[in-house]
Structures are given as C-alpha cells and as structure tokens.
Length: 277
Image (cartoon, helix red, strand yellow):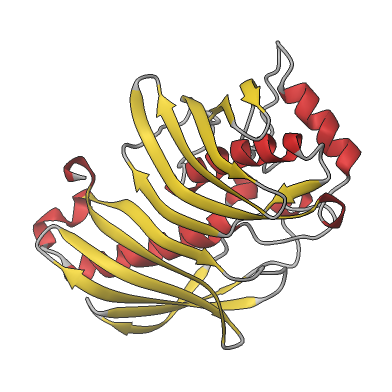
C-alpha cells in the first residue's frame, strides 16, 4: 500500500463524516503540500465507499479551493477530518482539514468527486478488508512510501520570464503508486499532477515578484481545480503556466495540462508569503 495516506480511521459515519490520522515518514526529505490534500481526499473516499458497501468509489474531479495554512515536517502526525455535504450515487461533495496538533496545515473546500464502479478500479473485497483494518482499535497501517510520491521529471520547453512557462512531463509506464492507484486501472494521481503544476507556478512566480522575497515564497492556495480526464501510464503531458496578476509579494497563475492537444486539467494557484495568507 505504497500510496495509502490514511494510517487509521478513528471516527466514521458512512456518507457523512470521519476523522483519521497520517504520520509523515521520518525518512521523507520533503512532503509536497498536495500530498496532504491527498490524505484528506483519501479519508473522504473511505467515507463514501463505506456508504455504498464498497460497490462504488469516488475519483478526483473538482476542488473549489485548497488553502495551504502551514508547513508539515517529517515525523509529524497529521489529524485528518472530513465532512460530506452530499454523498450520492453519482458524486460526493466534501470539505476537509489536516492539523498538526492545534496548527492547521491544509483546508479543502467544495471538493467534488464522481462515483464510479469499484470493480473497474479495485477488488471490492480487498478494499473492504483494508477499511476494517484501518478502523481497528490498534490500527497503525502506514503504507505510504516516499518513492511512491515522486513526481516525474519536468522539462521546461518554453519560458517568457515572469510571464509564462511551459513544461513537459512524461508519466512512467510503471511506478509504485500505480499498485494502489488503482490495481485494475492504473491512473496517475491527480494530486501528483497538481504538485507538478505548483512547482511550475512557484518557478514562474519567483521571476515575477520582488527578488528580496523570493526565498520566502510558498504556495498559498489552489483554486478552481478541474480534472477533466484520467492521465494514464506512458502519456506525455504539456503543462502551461501563465501569470494573471502580480504584486510585490504575491502572484496568481493560471495552469492547464494537455495530452496530445486535449486539455485534461486546469487550475489556478496563488504563490506568495504563507504567513500573510
């Protein structure tokens, strides 16, 4: 379970809400902010799957806004929480949070995931068993591996300094995360695609803001996120980043990803001073 970011489910009301935890491995040199969002999203998926008796599962679709509140470090135990406003046969709508103690790390709002047949993606019996283990009183089933979260290499192919940046990324044909995401239908995790976009946006923002604050830049929020189709093993993406507005200490950037000229994902990101968010 190399790409499982929920170690334990401590409370759950199927279809409604849940709490859980995820421990960031101590040997992980860096935790991409989007992977904390992945942990929250996985907890929401367990809530939805439990309600359907593991006949269906949600996949990433739309996120209204993801706010990065603070940084999490290796070894930190994150407390996860999700509230589902809707959990229907065709989709879920939820908000979610991750905390390190009393410190908020990330906040997700208005996230929508379409519900699809479980059998297309995974063995329903195996998923149910994993759920029962996670809900066990002594559960501590850390399965996340840093190797499973490595974003493929980015090659920059066009640059207008401080204005626009375009990069290419080739999805590997095999990788550790495909074993969990998903066994019967390998799909490149949407959060790893978002991570690539954020890294491109950060590079572009560093060229657009006052040079004196460049070392302090952090992603503040991602919003208007839409994942339009699955990205499959072996596909090549081109990711485009374009500055929308900029000030001395903050930049808003539009992001889009395409596969063979077809748009598969869009988002906007704000990069600036985290403490000012």
